[in-house]
Image (cartoon, rainbow, N blue to C red; front, side):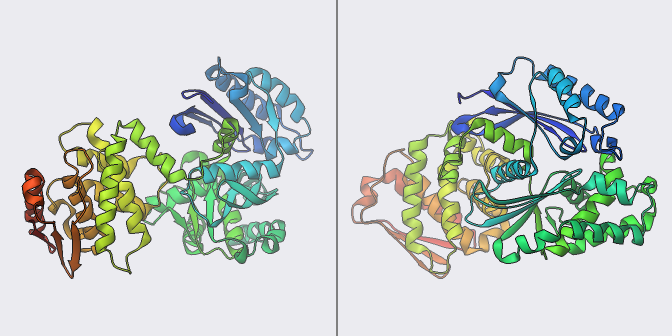
Length: 493
């Protein structure tokens, strides 16, 4: 697909309708352009005969008309609109879909629970770093809950269950009363509905677990607002929120920090289902993931599998976006890696070598912002750039290396005590100095050794006379390290 093409995904969920527009960027990445959300709560409009009320249909149609205006001019094959559990259940879904497709300007597809699960996994995987791990993904929607195991970008096992935050809130908390008996009934019913998952998704089948979409984000936001780590959900944290709901006694009195108003009416049902899932599958930690069904639909439209080396593609894309001299970055990377290999210990983490390699490729990424303090601009970019999917610890180390490769070392404060930062940083800084002419330096006969907190760089005879400016830069570098717990000794000949 041509770069700069616009794609759009419309997700007709039971609680909210969402529109996400993305632009196809360099290396076939999808960059968000616009995101619209309307809390339609169509799932509440199903009666006992499984028919959508006129009010529920009208709310949905009005939303789709607004989305349709925004999508005017989009190519037919650049938009995908999908409807999920509420319209799977609704006996009069055809009437809603017919009028809704007309207002939207694009056909609405009612997808199966299994297809919904596949799209959810693809959306979640697009937001995660590359990994060999088998990932368990839990998505608690308004009227359905999807459970998926996948690896890389492919879903391997999918299941969809008919329970969610909207349906469970309507069924067990219809009058807004929050008490132990209502929660006990909701959790027990959820476990009964999900009972097959206990055997189909044993802990031996997956390595790590993620939660996506509305309920997960609502729980994460509430935890963060209360000073807890909202990035990871645990049983203890869920019970903490459960106790808060019990303490207010009624949904109308609930003023939970971090909980958005549109989530308040359905939070009890969502937490009940999440408690049931975590207890049933014996999940220790659920990491909140940012991807969702709509991102999966966008990637399907792109019809492009992620490259085998996702990390390399992301680095190259950042280099192109910020005008990095790629050949020079590779040159610095080669020299830094050669120096690092001479002083690294057997106990050094592979992640340290990985961070050094990435930082070398991106050490000049801030130059497009400004030459002055470009290393600080570069550190900001690597820390905050959402287009790179590095694990948090790896991102932090890359950012430290980019920040520290230039200028004084005191800006890294106590972090410089760690040999897993100081030693690769020294290798990177030396590589930058040795490559100052932006040509391949003469490395033959140069040796780099470490003994405790001291590193020693030895050059061959005649090197100092042949490269006087390089020698001067190395002497300045030695002075910079003398103000840290580490020392850089030079034997320039």
